[in-house]
Length: 239
Image (cartoon, rainbow, N blue to C red; front, side, top):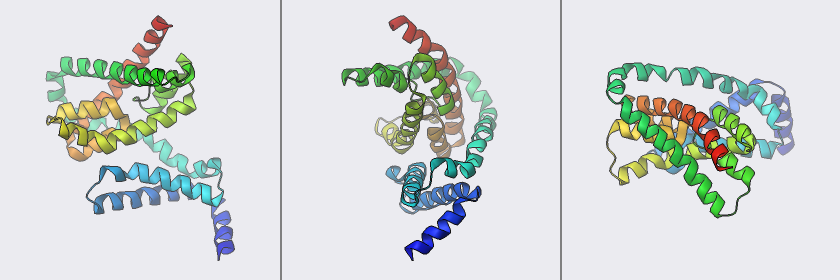
């Protein structure tokens, strides 16, 4: 039976759509479990999908390159999905205009805090310089974070892992923390999720309300811009 399954898997692995199918099934199963168990933050669909895909590739001996041949279709759709965040932004344009000064102040403060606290804790624990520089842009969306890490002397591959982990943790525990400290404003909650946990946090914010999602999407974009501009300057000044 095991040999038959392996033979079937080897055959399916030759088709480029296998990676796409595995990704969609893993995420849908994760979403179903998440909904059935009352949206438990520890059962985030993204986290479930990542673990399920890693285990599947490991158990079947499938190379990541083979998987990505099909999964790259999902990767391609990240661009249009990000652009689509302009829709809730446009709908909340009047609110955003009234709050532009507060938004900029919150994003700059959040951007610097995310970088400084992460690097500070890692430095106190004795991390190497490469690790510190890889950790600094962890709260920025992956493509921007990898570019920043490469520019300031970090490891882009390590940064990518840290960014995804940050996003998953932010989506899982962000709203819980905001509830505990009694942050009820949709705008404030959106800014916090967008700055701290980029795209994955924004997906979670959109589940709360369109206003929360709009502010989170804006914060994600502005945080990427602020970090790309400020972090290399800060590193240069402290070097």
